[in-house]
Amino acid sequence: MKSLKTPVIKVLIAAALSLGAVGAGHAQTAATAPTAANPAPVAAPVEAPVAVPAAADAASPAGDATYVPMKPTPGVGQPVDRGIDFQPQVSPIGEQAYWFNHVMLLPIITIISLFVLGLLLWVIFRYRARANPVPSKTTHNTFIEIVWTAIPVLILAVIAVPSIRLLAAQYEPPKKDALTIKVTGYQWYWGYAYPDQGIGEYVSKMLTKEQADAAGEPHQLAVDNRMVVPVGRQVKLIVTGADVIHSFAVPAFWTKMDAVPGRANETTFTANKVGVYYGQCSELCGVDHGYMPIAVEVLPVDKWEAWVRSKGGNPNGPVVETAAATTVSAPAAAPAALPAAKN
Ligand SMILES: [Cu+2]
Image (cartoon, rainbow, N blue to C red; front, top):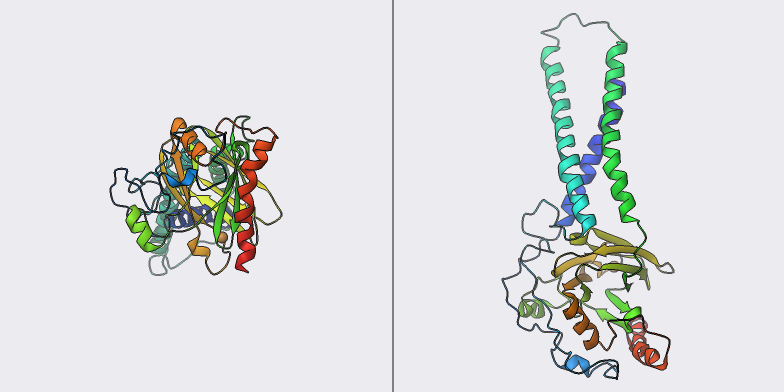
């Protein structure tokens, strides 16, 4: 029985880890978002923002201040009450991983667990002392030892193919036309910058309960300034930390990357469905670790371009190194100074 144990235990550990991941995806039971049309929520005024940054310059054509934060879809991009599954996936990697878990791992784990449980029950019942007073003295059976070694090896080999393929896909370098966003974790909020569009860093902070309710968004996931990306275009995240280690994670994209001070970590995602998707800091980073949510809004390309212009950026960046670019990136100084101000 000994040689059977190790592979089975490995598979069971994998099962436990996988279940842990499922739980983590839903660890937070946020209030289900109410149904919604499209009215303007609180924190981002519709008309005002154009005037606010020093960016109401020549780069932004008039009439682009049409960005209104989108309402989330209930049950999508956020945890659901009593949920035990992953969030619905809206990126190709996420779909691949979801398939791998549900079509490969869960069935295999279930079958093996039931099989081992059945064997145990059978041994307990059939070979109990009363039914089997003279135990067998057999110690080795070459055939069965080969079988119970070879079959687990085959199972692991079958699992390894899609597993390694998924792992490799997650680390594929970004495409040339990927949209670059710099993500910085602070104690305790996020900063986003779009260097190629000339959008300097702006900070994204959690809404209060009242603000979130008013905006029709889940409290502790809703933020004042979202990350906004175009649908169907690959996004390259450059993730770093300003003070301690944070972790940028959005379950619906199957995206998670540590934000480490002094390092620029890279990851990518491609959101293939318009909507609002929430995530959270996923590395214990201090007292307000639980209060630095992430909200990513995926927009049709034209609406995303309007958002970029409303931020004073150029959607067709990269911005060339001119005086204009310097002007646009000036607002970055303000958020960067914030953490210092807190200390
Ligand atoms: Cu954090």
